[in-house]
Image (tube, rainbow over all chains, first blue to last red; front, side, top):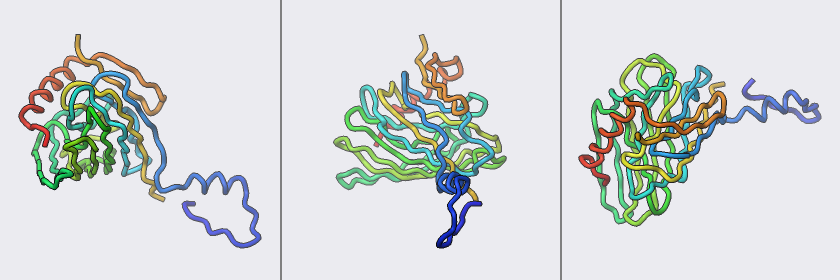
Length: 187
Length: 41
């Protein structure tokens, strides 16, 4: 009952209201905020209910410098540390273009946590709960002097079913980071 | 003392702070080394 068209004069029941108000395209699952250290891990957020997920990363701040925020998938509370393939394109606000890529590495490079102005990013995750590759697309930016915009994608090339993920400062510690997790409705 | 991580559990809503495991700490050291090799653009 994903969609229903009401007609003039029809009674809108409490049941219909509750059902259809909840039938948004993105369904909130959970959120997590940094409390200490350089890693924020989220467990048990990927389930068989959805095939695709959106992670919204906001207020990514670092204690001392600007660092890459790495993404790893986890199963039963343990990060997978091999089999990631990714590439990204970046352009600084001054117009300088950079490209980076790595094959069969230990994480996917995504956005930036900055020591001055916070970074932000959105990451789409496809098929973490399927027994095929887990795919990722992302885009983000940060607004410090020397900041840049980034977009890229990658895969985790194995058939493991994942139920969570970690966001990791490439060095040092975060001072803030909040991630919201949504599932893409399928019907 | 190993670095701490923030760990959230979506099913219970609980968030904890704990010390890294030995395996996590080993990867953490590799991450730091990679950060020097793959310097931020």
